[in-house]
Length: 551
Image (cartoon, rainbow, N blue to C red):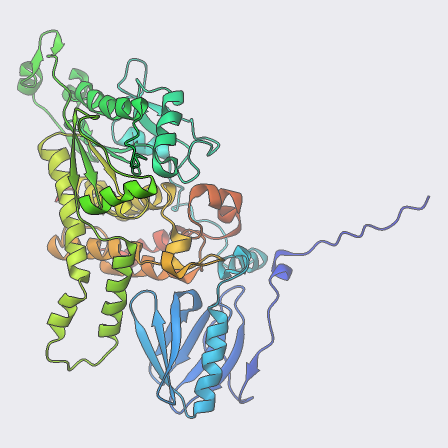
């Protein structure tokens, strides 16, 4: 038989994302900005003092002496104000008003922009995928992940923080979640007490909401105290218990106690304390710490574990009706529970919308500052920083291990843990360290960027909340208080926020590592770090003094 030609046709990557034809009101109008790889301008029109271009990536408005560049996924809503004014409300708190020459023109552009910001039916419709495909097909474009944008390495961070994970060490690295079977919203590898087996860990996960068991994320290299994060226990109205969960929290305190003292060799050679080398003289080594004897450290009782619950007591108690709850100290005898009274995502969303509405209004309001206070935005920022300081005092001053959770452990938990680590560890206040902090606490540990930013399909408006924006605002407030302690400037934060919503890069797409792995996002999009890190000089803080301890 004659062989039939194959019916399979090879499509180039750029053919999967074809460009659409340009529609313009006047043939004399020209696209007056460089289009990105994969970008195509679809609509072009002119008003009395500006030219508007709408592409598959952004709304670009050109004035005589300036321009506005608004990525489509940054737009939260558009609405008509009066007959000729189109108001664009953005997810980063900015608002813009576009004045058209006629009502028909304003209504037409309302429909065009509204159609562009509708939820997508599939993730490949986000511009990051088209941008990557066309970049790969363009020989002269920026295509590779820059060498300076090295991926986050769990093992390197474990080594940097001084965890001892060898034989007879208090800690070990568990790969029980290597296939995301224990918890789909967690990373693959975790640091846990060496006395806890993988089977115990699985039982703990079954007792915690969404399987988010207590995982160690940071270690104080002077006193050995650690920070762990998790979700609420599933206590319910019946007061369910888990022996394995109680054992794990007790083991964290015991592991910290046995991990308190560095070896004599480390003292002689100088140890790296949170990224800074500390030398000790012979007197320090010979005399030893106060609790040392000739035979080694004197036996000590485990430090009391501080459980920081980001919710209020009332909210935590009410969660029992949904199967959640909080730890009872009679079941966790070596633990203390503190409630931080932080608002949930619904309260933060309302506060943010009030703030944006106020900032987009008139500037000559006589009681503007009191209206700012009524939005409660600064109050929420203050409460977040206060919660982080509580953790810092417990870890640094008291040498106590801290376990942090809220309800699910991916919003408020992430915010206060990342803030506390930023205060404690000067490495995270560098440009490279800040990247690692975001990679671990926000991306690896499953902050729901798709839901909170409105990137995915089947978007629930009730799940949207500027959680990451709020955290970046907290970092900005710390920069203002300690201007020489951060290597990066506020421009770095603004650029990160912009690309959190822009969908130009794949870094902040998806809700967790399992989802990003399933959708092969890293293999089909560019990383925001490959754009930012080669441009470090543009984001450096000229007042940065370098080094330093906690702030």
